[in-house]
Image 1 (cartoon, rainbow, N blue to C red):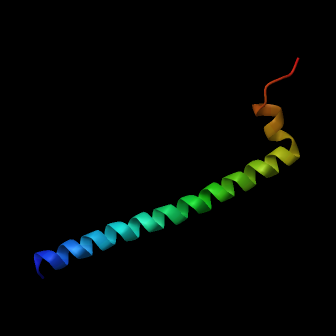
Image 2: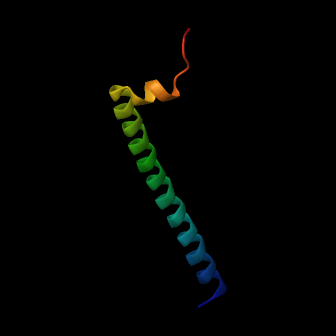
Length: 54
């Protein structure tokens, strides 16, 4: 295996890892926002994390 081939394989591996992390992060953010929306509808998020208006 030549130096160029090894360098190309390493770069492709790093780009592949970055793509996987990007899509997994989008999936997690979507699930977190859906969970927060459910908590807000239940009133739990509003009760514990909102400032009082008195």
